[in-house]
Amino acid sequence: MCGRYANSETIPVMRAHFDAGGPDVDWQPSWNICPTRQIPVLLGDESSRRIGLMRWGWNPAALNRRLLINCRGEEAQDKRLFQAALVRRRCIVPATGFYEWQPGADKKTRPQPFAFMPATPGLFGIAGLWDSVGGTGSVILMTVPANEMVAPVHDRMPLVIPLADTGRWLTAEVGVSDLLDRAQAMDWRRWPISRAISDAKKEGPEIMAPA
Image (cartoon, rainbow, N blue to C red; front, side, top):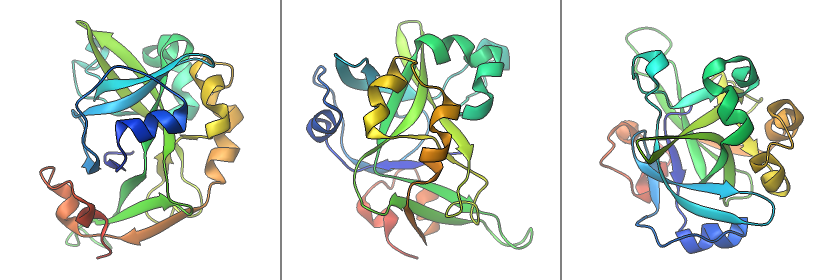
């Protein structure tokens, strides 16, 4: 799963990167974004894109309102819960890094968090699906099997949408299977970080400092 990520950029930088507009929103860069936060989300199509804020996490009735933050991208088209969103409600979540936890060698050893960033640092987009309940938008992130860099830490990773495929993803012209190989081929850096990331109140750049 992907239960924490970083977005250390401002709204103007994100809009320039993704060629998007949108209303003014209250957003501060964060290195420790956790579920239930209001996060920047890209919506639109090839000709008109906008970035606004949505809550991270669905509470679907089908799961007794249990919080859902991820879905398996390669299985989404076969799950009734995601089918309509995969056709009509796709989005992209801007990010600059993500985190995963490596299980301990035994039950007494606490999991070790690792940070992941592109080999060339900068913004990238995570595939997402959005929904609206009571007029409030919410989003989940899509994950896929981990590539060789992520797999020693965790068996899943976010589905990254290449910038050139932004419009095609948003308009459902391409599916997860079309992008999987390219997404997994991305070059990443990883390093262990402090367990302070588990504290949602800490969200400065020190979160990414090597342990």
